[in-house]
Length: 242
Ligand code: URA
Image (spheres, rainbow, N blue to C red):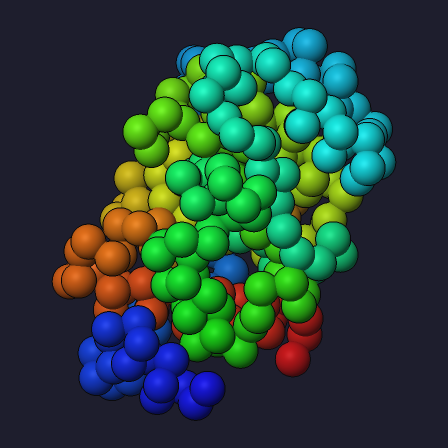
């Protein structure tokens, strides 16, 4: 697929193409860390049982722990827990919110409509699911009716994501949407204010952008998402020293 075709498929053709120049990339300081933000009370402490359970686990042990997890009520309605997908030594880690109906059915993150857009966003910057890319979610079980997970649910599930990050050791983390950003940054986040600059997750650079499902509904923010993709690509180049 050519880049033109990718952009057209995303419904962004001319808009994304026109802005895909260095001059259109946000004026934010590329590698300037963002100021720390206030912490969310409800996200300060991971659930002790889950935290203890995930410490030091191998991938196989972690996968088994997630499948068996009953630490919050999301386990009650799930078909299956969805750990994540991709290269377990990826430089890129994308973190979404939580599985939807199709993900719950198939056991893989971002396989529905939002996932198609995510795949096209990846392709637009030369990336492909599974190749130097890992995709995970803030919560591993589907919230009923696709509601946003509560901060208690994300806090309970967070140790699993933390262990995934320890195992992957990505060079760059991309938080897709507010729940992912808040879970990782442990602070109140507004995407509009947080995007375009580098944040820090335990020493790993982190970029915040819009969730693909939001972009499907909000055409006017797709140009900003393209800017964020350019920022990610530039940042990774800097991180890799080329
Ligand atoms: N939305 C998400 O945040 N994650 C998925 O896996 C699917 C949709």
